[in-house]
Image 1 (cartoon, rainbow, N blue to C red):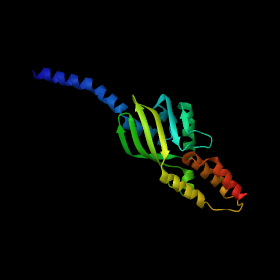
Image 2: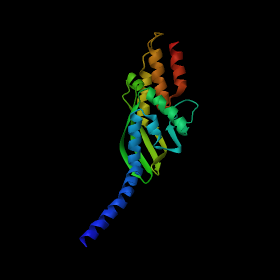
Image 3: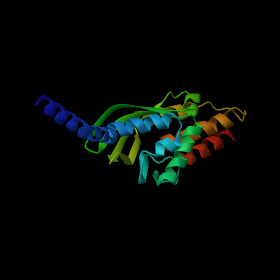
Image 4: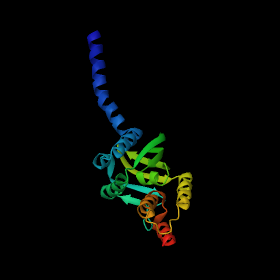
Length: 196
């Protein structure tokens, strides 16, 4: 009897193990956290393995003037991520909550150009849909507080009277803000016009 009980217990554990592993691999919060680790490692190939084949992402406000902020398909998403990697972009997730397939978090983002103009980071409301262990879509919406911080920083940039200093720094800063804060190329044109 004891041998039979041990055999049945062992069989139940062996059969339950793959189910438990599958549940861990497809747990929406675990998928999002593992994806975030790959992103911060700068490994686009690894990060892309967490996306569904028909995945799309949406950035609010749009990152560039004339763009709707939606990147569809892995190649378009990879191209977007390469922009972030070029700026040494990193992010952290906090306050994550799962409700079925939906994970909501605060995504705190920083990069070299933001820090170069004195903005430590920006926050985004981050909503991810995970189905069958793959990210179907995510939306990153810059918080009103972060948008206000970016706008105040831009307004405080020094006027240079034609000195060469701001050209590189200003292009990097405004490029980053356009990408992340939705200020767009119009702000760049206005700022350069003021200098000229």
